[in-house]
Each structure stands twice: as C-alpha cells, then as structure tokens.
Amino acid sequence: MGNKAAVLIVAISGRALAASARRGGYLPLVADMFGDVDTLNAAHKHVRLAGDLASGIDQQALVEALQTLSEGQKPVGVVYGTGLEDKTPLLRRIAERWHLFGNSADVVAKVKNPEAFSLTCADLDIPFPEISVSEPTKAAGWLAKRQGGAGGAHVKPAHQSRNVDGKIYYQRKVSGIAVSASFLADGERATVLGFSAQWSSPTPRQPYRYGGAVRPAALTPHTSDSLTAVVCRLAAATSLVGLNSADFLVDGERFWLLEINPRPGATLDIFETKEASLFAQHIAACSGRLPAASRCPADAKAAGIVYAEDDIPSFSVLDWPDWTADRPVVGSTIKAGDPVCTVYARSLAAAGARALAEKRGEIVLSWTRARNS
Image (tube, rainbow, N blue to C red):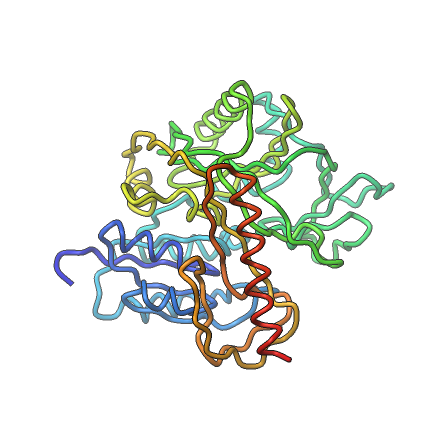
C-alpha cells in the first residue's frame, strides 16, 4: 500500500474515477451501483449500492457504505461523480463527516436550480434557452427536464411528462449539435481541457438518452474561443471547483448553454491521458491548485454506452476485447435498457472514431443476443 492516500469515491458508476485515481497514485475506496469487473479491479475496497437507475442512490445506504469503506483506512476525502446532483442534503451530510473534493452543496444547488441558473446566465450575457417551472400552455417546442437529472434519459418532450413531484422544469427547445466542454476550475479560474460532441441512444420513452461522446468536437476557432470564455465567466461567477463539464447546443457560430454538470462525468475517459491523471488534477483544482492546460492528443477518441435490448437474467462468460470497459461480472442480472458496457474507439478523425465505436457497440449487442436466445 506504501504511502498512497486512500480516497472515497461515490457515483452511479465509479470505474472511470477509480481507474484515474489509481493512475494518480491514490487508493480508491469505491461505492457505486454496478460493481463491474473493471471497477472491482481498480478499487482497493468496494461496496455495491442497492437500488436501480430509476430510483437512484439511496441516501442512508450511501452513508453506511462510506463508513464501511472507511474502516481501517484514513481517507483524505470524498470525490463524487454522477448521481448526487439532485441530492444536496446528502452532499451536506457527507461534507460534515469527510472532506469533500468537489463542489459544495450550495454551489451544486446554485447551478442546478433552473430559475437561479437562468438568471446567472442572463447577468453574464450567456445565451440560455427560455425556461419555465410551470407546464407551458402549449407544449410544442418545449422539453421537460428533471432538476439534477443526468444522462439525458430524464429529458422528454413536454407533452410526455407530468410534474407530479414538483421536480420537473421546462426548457424551450433549440437546435444545434450537442457539444460538451470539459474543464477544471479552482473557484475563480477555469482551464478548458477540450470539447467533445455527444450523441444520443434514443428509445420511444427516452428520446434523449445519452449514447456517447467523441473528441474533438468540430468547432470553428471563433466558436471554441466563445465557449471557452463562457466557461471561464461561469466558473468565476458560481465558484466552481474541480473537474466539471458544460453542455451546449452549437449551430454554426450560434450556441446556447444548456446546463453545467458540477462533477466529473461521462467524458472523463476520452480526455484522460497517459501523462496526467484527471482525478489527481481534480483534487489539485479543488485544493486551489489549477493545473496548466494539458494538450489533447492529436487523434480522435470516442466512448459509447451499450444498452441491453432485453432482460439478461444471468450474464455469461465472455472473452472481452480490450476496447471495452465497465464489463459486468459473470452471473449479473441486467435489465432491458440498463448499460451492458462501454466501448472505445480511436481514429484520425472524430467521425471515424464515432463510427467505429458504434460498430463495436453493435458487435457487443450481437453477442448478447446470441447468448440470450
């Protein structure tokens, strides 16, 4: 174990954070909802959280998991990924017990509250689609989103969603290509690591479900500079720290900011390099040490999510290729619509990397069909 510092990691899927933590010289103590082969290999200790993607992370179960992981260890703090944006009381509870390497509950609440965030964008002169907390009289042209939602599965046309629990808000639909800016911030300044283009993996009930991302995004130098300036202004105005991402829709030289994801997310894998651990850079930025911008590799890299088409009662043995990750443990039960694994691809250009990732996703699905028939 040497002198490596132990760190607690919590996310719906903790594999990418755990692997980057290992590269950065940390001992990952991981609580996540999958417990896949790659997460177990990267983690020093692991606790699988009960629940499912629909209900999310159970708050009491998570606190108990972190306490279990801490036994016999002296973790320097907690790093959280996807799954806590709508649970600011839980973030406060965690911060009372452990040091939080990430945005505070107050900062998360500030950027995930649609009304407050809309006003912030207006003050900073940042293009932001019109929002409404009440259901529009005419639903056409509006999207319904869940406050704190992630992954795109929560986004639906307004007429398909009812605000029964008061957690739904509505955003005017705008056109453009989905582009995400991955960046590090220290509470005052920000460094943009790069831009990725995202695509969806739609279903009839989830037309905007996240499908994958490829870097680099095809942006003009002017648009790239404009989006970078937006990220820097927002990071300073909202006191963001650590690794975050900003989601945009880009239409030529025009763009709209859709939301800030105030934690490490799905594009960590495609921006991670052999030279630098983004996990270590996240911790440094949260501690007020903003790393210098690292140069993105010259090639293109894509990461896509493969979703199960049907229920898989017991996942069988599979000779996984090295272009896969998040591989399920043999015997795992996977529900239709849940992730099976992640696939990667590299190419000289983004279009080729995305096409190869999608082809590889189809290969994995063909294997699951054969074993599930």
